Image (cartoon, rainbow, N blue to C red; front, side, top):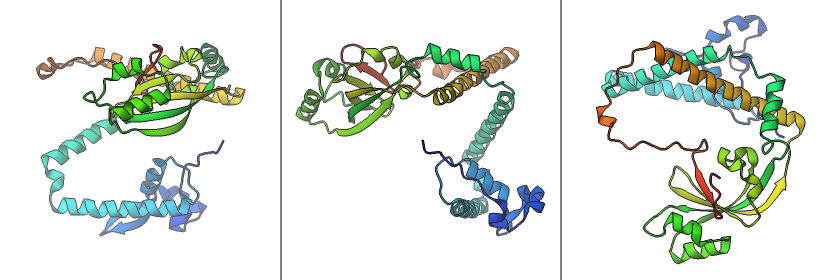
Length: 296
């Protein structure tokens, strides 16, 4: 498996300093924009947010530096126009400040959570064989089109067609444009509800989905391949999932604790007439198997 290399910057790359001066690198100035300083630390902070394969660290570092210079020029022009004092900008700045504080607090608290032990990880793997020892990869042909009730009823569509050819013919007869894609869908990328019914899916089945962009995705299963993970790979994946669940549980518990200690006065009269939203799947999509399976 190809590794992702997360870009970092060597201080000497842009500053020409040696290892003896590394203690001062966090504040070392590498550019000035009309007197405003840009430091190595700022470039490094931007690079840490870029999570993508990179072959040339130096080129990326210089590109980030140029983007910081461009941004500072725009900041200076905004300040000249007193845009930093307009209500909408002040509101956005305060919202960003609050978000940063909240994230910093949670990051500090979450950092103290112990990592999952080997026993916890192995137990999780035993409880979810469909993702590990019984993992499968579905090869599918996806038909994607906009959900337009004026042309065709989504629920009726699911009960009307039973194979890919019937689906394409029906969409064409209603003059609905669609795109076709070839996909490989591993167990771990499927919504939680789908995993319990994975063994019921057969080659030729249609899996109906819709996403938050009002797009309908119909997956025709071309093949189902048994693809269990190797032990080390499975342990690594399971550890990430278990640790993330522990972090999420901690955050939920911490918010509950803080709410119990706080006095929260709500004045949401304007919201009382809004319909309650149903909980969505973690993937943000819903689906139906044409034989009645739900969740994928």
